[in-house]
Image (cartoon, rainbow, N blue to C red; front, side, top):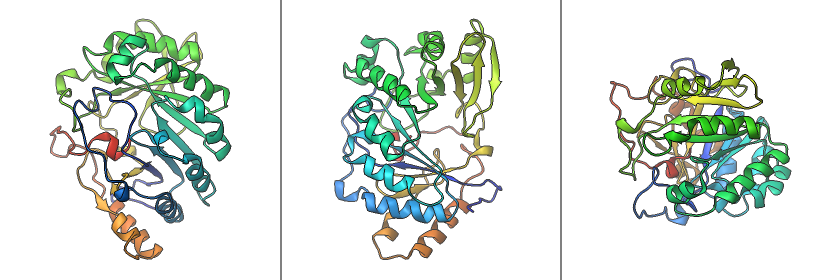
Length: 324
């Protein structure tokens, strides 16, 4: 079992399989950026080995992220291999949804259990403006097919930014009911590669909740997967909404995760620039036992909370490298 200094059990591994993405969302990146060289990105075989080592140490859940993970070829192979790893109980995917409709059948056949779809507007013209591409209908088709494929719950991740999409908060609440999905409102987080972020553009979860309560009566709902979202049902409808508050609240006391970046760095904390080179061990002849000890040491170094010292700063790595 992986346990840190603060008695948190770490059983959740998020893996960025690529830093490449088919969209250019303005809040993520606003200029040209270099991709990681392909030979520096972890191979599937290296990822599978690391998952097996981690599972023997107590990891039970794996989420595949990017970049956009569906831009990487043969992803169902990776899903199958991870899903068949002894000890892994849940394998999920975070995607922008553009390619999901075309891939959902092979992904579910491979063993995918859940999906999170990033969607920051319900207006096609605004979607094209935010992402740089007119593919809103493809994302909606992906959501529909994910529901029909039996993935439950289907979660919609929505980053709310003041002056950008905060006029759609109630629209997303209605959407949660109409489509019977979970919409999770995420506070705008500070990462590099974009000049858009500053503290004045953050709308806190408390403000969003107040806005929604003007239309719906909310009741707390147990988060079945023990993630960072505070979940609620809305009286009169089947949908659920959640609030993820990395800026306004300390959600760290229940953190159960570590992150593996696409270029093989292990991050014990999303908001810290501290990372550890696992790829050097994977490619340098280290034994499974050596790597397991290394991971245990990294978990032991996990900080108690983000922004230690009270300072909010931009992480130097963009989210497409770290993995959402």
